[in-house]
Image (cartoon, rainbow, N blue to C red; front, side, top):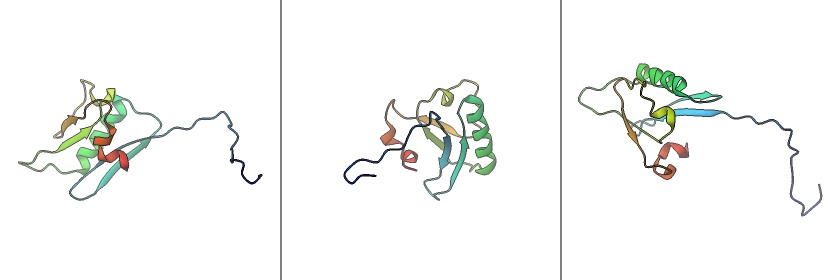
Length: 101
């Protein structure tokens, strides 16, 4: 390593990508997440099923899921259980506070 020269790491040709599907309660800060290699409608449905088992339904209270416009969020076959989906405007990640997590 020479002083003044930027460091570099040789590229090995492998690319590792992991996705995180998550939900957070703004009232309590509780976080539920699922780390997966890729996300599709089936994976998202599995996450919603687990979320519905973990988060109790509160009668008389709306339970919103605020999310972006990913295709798996909008699949017609999604079972939302008792959650109400709310979609952000397109290309607006700054409005979704969970992106900071």
